[in-house]
Length: 249
Image (tube, rainbow, N blue to C red; front, top):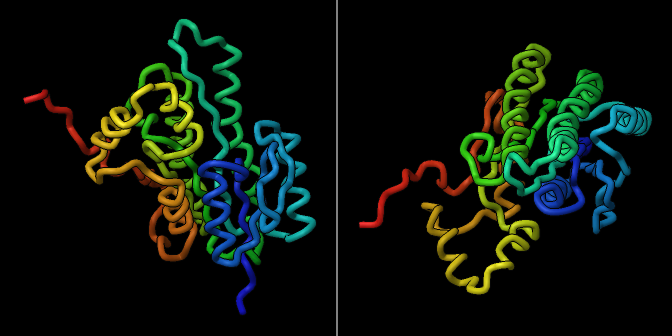
């Protein structure tokens, strides 16, 4: 029986991160959740971590190194968003979003690389969660969109610099995923049936995304099945960006 892989997932306690962590657990992997919030399962090891803090990330990796000695897969999933016009966005809010969404991706990658270079690490892979909002635009999301575009760019450089060491790095750009966060946005509308139909109509596949859609993609990108794929941003949006707008005819 093969030794379980060592998987680290940031923001793995809820939403997309929890689904990603659960998918690796299902495969028999050892999953470590780096988050400020504990996951709702004892199948995942929780290490409380502020992933935007270099001291916090360094302590996390020191603990993992002591207990396991190496890491096979890192999923940089932690992220936050605000909805504000550009003139109303404070510099503190901008910095908070960049810290959680971008700095954490940099810090986690920086400090995990030595553990991925250990001889025990098998087909090491990094999966970053970006967003289609780093490619297109939604109103009131300027800081979030900028942060996710930065994640995609950082993904390309990581793949370029560490491919020679056998480490792959890719990003996933989810579209509208049915999470409690998005459900809260939709709950403010009185006629949900109309709103749901309008949003579903944006997607050629005819439905909203699920957290498992993203989780399955992350699992694949972290597996040998995608061994010749690196430096890419995989769009998981049900075809939303592929649809060109047409006037009502």
